[in-house]
Amino acid sequence: MKLVNLSIAAAAVCVLSTSAYALKSEDRIVKGNYQIEYTKVPGEVNSITEMFTEGEVYGRLRSNMFWWDWENENSAVQDNNMWGLGGSLVYKTGYFHGFGATAGFYGTVPVHNDNTLGTGTTNYGKAGKDTYHTRADGSEGAMGNFAEAYLEYKNGKTNVKVGRQGIDSIMLATNDTKMIPNTFEAAVIENKDIPGTTLRAGYIMAQKLRDHQSFHSVIAYEKYNENDDSGVHKGLTPANIRSRGAGDVDPEMVLVTAQNTSVPNLKLNAEYVALNGFFNTAVAEANYKIKAGDSWTVTPGVRYLRQMDDGAGKIGGASLSGTVTAANAASKGYKNGDNVDGSIIMARLVAATGPLELSAGYSEVSDDADIIAPWRGFPTGGYTRSMAQVDWIANTKNWAVKAAYDFEKAGLVPGLKVAADYENMNFDDAKAATSGFTDRNIFHVDAWQTFKTLPNTEFKFRFATVDADPAVGATTDYNSYNEYRFEVNYLF
Image (tube, rainbow, N blue to C red; front, top):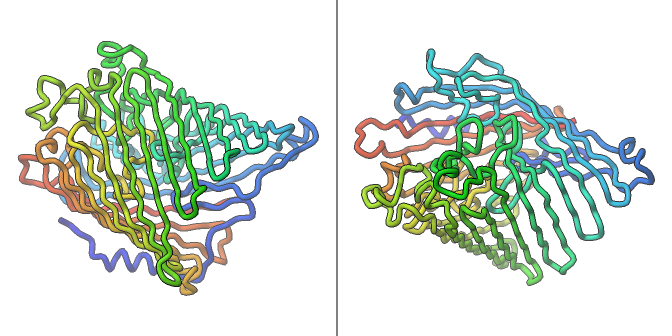
């Protein structure tokens, strides 16, 4: 494989390692996943007029560059790059008797020619989600939409949001790592009246993926028009849903989450996702922090996910590829071709001291059906999953080690943070020909940097190298590649 010498990646990190401090504006913090945390928002006002005159506008400019360097090239896989410029304007009103509203417009413009193969329709833009709008004919264009537009009501420890909004849980995520966030049309209520407990319930009607202009089905697969994310089930097409299932191409999703921290050092999480006529998913997680010595803490964690079939197996089959049925299941490595019952067991150990955090994780998917998770929340996230990887295919066994170091917290390089991980993904060889995923090793590093001379600006460099086995029966490897990303964020 055309592995890049790790010294190149290290040098790129060092280039960013000049005097700086962490990116924080007076009203926002940019998280590591590039979601915004608002630290200063409008408060209560005395009239409807003041709701708007006392409102706040939050601006953001972004630049996102991607480069892919493939081990080998063919008609469908070639080295490519892309660059987009964009940003967002989010307006939050003041709150009158607890009522307020938020509207956010997000946009991006490509800074290069169409990324197509000759006169064909191969569109590399689907790999660089929402750097620009990807069309079915392989062309690209500017895009913009109101990804956020919701009404809000606050009363004591209860919060209600209705409209277009980001939702973050184990299975769902706003996932704002590119230019436009993944959001949902939903009604969500959250309550914290029980000490140490946060309860939330959501009724979700539609989703808008990061490179889509409009909202669409949360589960139906159709490239460019419906849910076409990397974790989507390609057998759950509108045609299959209508002919083999209940016929509801736009089903509502019910989300229930609970978090409890009433026991010192113990965090418990539970989640339930229901799609009537398709499947239900339940997740339970526990993490317990233990003090080890004067400065170290050790936190063991476990997560269990159970996916329960409610019709999706009959519609699309047991594999995310959409090609497995009851008749061909055995030949494709699946025990039951028309049932999506499945599960994942995960465990990890996190050790932290001062600026350093180390972790080791393991995940094992049951030898049943692939796990369906096309909402940008990753079932194995925080345990094994590395950047741009899907490691929840049936009978997959994964392990990963991760490290993060805050150079500013260590008093070495103000503003610099670096995180790296290594993942080994061991897929079931009997399923590899169906899933398209082959055994692989991934090394991935992120580096964040800000500069005192450039206030409210952050630079982020990402590098990943994937060393994968060739496709089943192939002698040439078209699965291995190096990936580079460079992003600039500016808040105003």
